Length: 259
Image 1 (cartoon, rainbow, N blue to C red):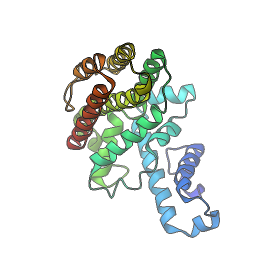
Image 2: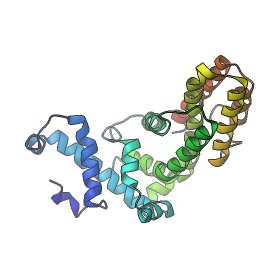
Image 3: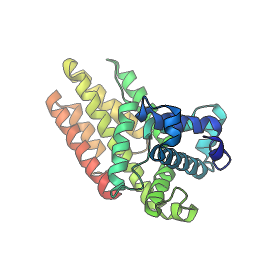
Image 4: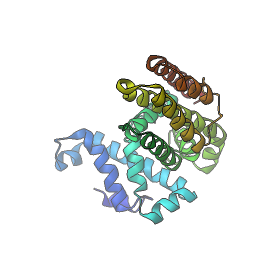
């Protein structure tokens, strides 16, 4: 089934298989012969293959993707792991909601758990932002918005460039949303162990990660990172969790509005 698509795609054969596996995960128990006769599944496979092929073509000019390919890191597997099937993108009436949901999925995958070690928090947060910069940077967002607007997986470079200014703003809001999500997850984890020392270390880790991501002093997603960090630093556990949840709600609302 892949043979007729292979020559038309920017994806390698192995990358096409990764896309197919991802789609088929939601159709457990179905046989290959049933797939061949099921037009709905075949259409979903085609949509996802076209999306990821178009995305790879768009990002191929970027230094980041070239480095990923040279180092042997599975670029497409990483994207698929966080973004998954895009069958609802073209029919969605709210691309902001679609992006917001993907950011939450990414956060759950990037921050699955923490240890009682401040170095662990800082390392995980910084690594998460490095991955976001590679997988979901401004050009990725511009491509998604252009594809959604054109209702096509090949919107063209001009249409993508037309979305770049807005995409760059949205990218910063996404980073701030991830800071807030990380703060909530970290503070909830630290609940049974909360102390003045943990509060200070949590604030330092979040601040270090924000600086690493280039948004340390950025405000504009409904909250100010510096303000949130200062609240956490001197807060009780309940106060810190409330501040983080408020920041997350504001960031998510801003993300939907910006898109």
